[in-house]
Length: 232
Image (tube, rainbow, N blue to C red; front, side, top):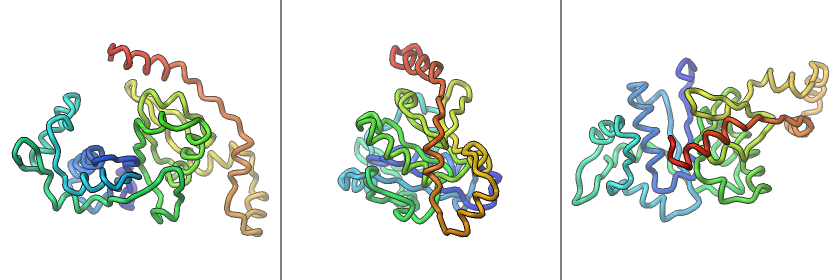
């Protein structure tokens, strides 16, 4: 993604009090060494947690031990306040905070597509029908070739014709298939594309829904079981 000529758009969906969005900002800034190469968005349906996010004051239980090697990035961008840690207000201002209901949003909500979306530990609270609707909307705002990260226990719940399962060092995530691959998979010919263009039909998801793609989730289930049993 770093080779793209345009700045990256990264979205922490269901960001709650903002720890994930701040972590993404610090990681991206550390990687690029310049903030104009990326934009971070954090959204939640709950205005109270977004207000907490705006204040940027956190207690020690917000800092996970398995992220210890990144804590120096936090220390460089924060100050001690009583028994809490306050993230620099100027950093918080650089993150776009937005009140978003995942049950009803679309491309117009943000006016852009995202290269990276993190939606972790959220889908488990929804019915299968609602999960499908949310994932459809998430895929709509994800750039072709972009990446979607869910929690390990949520991965087996998701199957979508435009998402390809990827594994790197026992970490599982989804990548949205490039447009050319999706067109080929859906069996859409050049003449059909021309017809669609001529008729001004912009939404071809009807064709995509005809494709039944089965994702083998045995490895994901094994990984999730290991994690739940504290073997990882």
